[in-house]
Amino acid sequence: MKDKAEVVVIGGGVNGLGVAYWLAKKGLDDVVVLEKSYLGSGASGRNTGGVRQQWASKYNIILARESVKMFEKLSDELNFNIMFRQTGYLILIWDEEELEQFKKNVKLQNSLGVPSKIITPEEAKEIVPPLNIKNIIAATFCKKDGVLHPLALVWGYERALKRMGIEINTFTEVKDIKVENGEIKEVVTNRGNIKTNIVVNATGPHAPIIGKMVGVDIPITPYRHEIMVSEPLQPILDPMILSFKHGLYVTQTNRGEIIGGISTDEKPGYDIRGTVQFAERFSRAIVEIIPQMKYVNMLRQWAGLYDMTPDAQPIIGPTEGVHEMIQINGFSGHGVMLNPISVKLVAELIVDGKTSIDISPLSLDRFKEPMEVKEKLVVG
Ligand SMILES: Cc1cc2nc3c(=O)[nH]c(=O)nc-3n(C[C@H](O)[C@H](O)[C@H](O)COP(=O)(O)OP(=O)(O)OC[C@H]3O[C@@H](n4cnc5c(N)ncnc54)[C@H](O)[C@@H]3O)c2cc1C
Image (cartoon, rainbow, N blue to C red):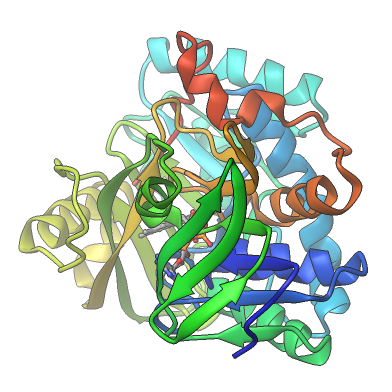
């Protein structure tokens, strides 16, 4: 392991790997990635890979819109198939109050260039023939949304980094960061120390622990989110379906498995064991939405952590009081879909000292002020 680097990136999920990739692409290749377990061992290897631009807050929409443009080319760029397919997101609407809210969301999305629209239950059934439309009054659909294979994104970045000669150290845990007069001096790990002046904190739900090492509070709370897959079926479900009434999302993988999750009454914590309550709640809800699912065997379930911020928007940018400590964390359950543009912006900040999109509203500082916007459309 190197004992000196221009930049140390902590975290081997999509955001840490993506930042390292963009730094190298911009010519800064004296970079080391440190991951305490294996690559993708955090949420990056445990999610559904959903890519949605249908958000209610401006910044989530902009970051998702820019990321979709980048995902469209990323397999070619990485020379690795991340299996991105634009089969849309279908959001079910159950009552007038929801409809009014979604009309506003669609208006905001359209004004920012996202081609979402309100459709009738019958149109929703054309998109997903087995859908039970008995109790829905409308839906929204954006055909440019989609899904990808999240581990393929991890592996695509990993291979690109190896080709570019970037050192990745797995099973290397950051234990401390030495700071003098607000300047970073050294990163301490279980495998030795690395002298550096620039650190990127891409540790998701562990970001507050890294923050404490430099005396900074990062308001991220970890919550368990579970997920489940069925036996493989013939293709029946092209888009990702969301139902905020149930807190449910579900789609079908390329291998034919039905995959999805649902909100449960979680308390904050780092526990990622599966629960029977989740399996029961998900199974009941999915049968209500797609009745044929009652004949299908669910095979496997697992869990990961959402790194929730108070406003459910990510933290991207510098850290007041600690020069060159860059945050990219707190993605609140949507860090894959916002990944390509977020990691590019962090690399711009480090290499160019400025970013092509103003990210000041996403800075850690924002939590000092009363909350202006809270994203409400987090699911699962
Ligand atoms: C069940 C579930 C479903 C999801 N579905 C979606 C979805 O459909 N679409 C979407 O966009 N997002 C989804 N997400 C969210 C998405 O997975 C995350 O937002 C994203 O993976 C965050 O990536 P990351 O690189 O920031 O963090 P992580 O992938 O969590 O990576 C952080 C890494 O830091 C490492 N680390 C922590 N502390 C240290 C240390 N001290 N030293 C060294 N390494 C350390 C960890 O081991 C970990 O590998 C889902 C999440 C879950 C749990």
